[in-house]
Length: 204
Image 1 (cartoon, rainbow, N blue to C red):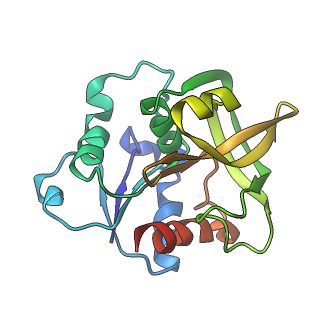
Image 2: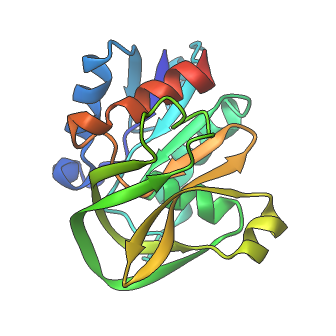
């Protein structure tokens, strides 16, 4: 069973976090999950095989306070040995705590773009093509990577898209079974398989 950390804050922002799409995608593949939005001692005692950090309208570059993301850090520490998959904000959050720079783009980019994948990576190697067409993005913060930065922090780029006419990383392997994508694999049914591959390849 997966632990889904729902980052839809405030409560009426589910359309920005795509949490309803995430539930649908997991149920489509019959992946069992428990969802939480806060620190819950009962969840601390449960058994999970992995964690998903959902998207969120919260911004890493915005006025975030410890209280805003304490519940995320709580579960990452309680279940520190589990694989983690971060989506959009979840991806940016993982990048931030791993030492990477997150840059404010000044406006939201909500659009579909083609994504090029590392076919040898466990998350993507089951795909028949290295290119997934029309994956959903909705971000205003962008994780900044360079070969030197990735080498310094032992991080691997595993997915790219074209942003502002540049090849830009949109999927990272942070090491220790921690992964993330800037795109939302839960938005379109043709990309649901990314979640299934995370569950099967990294959690079981």
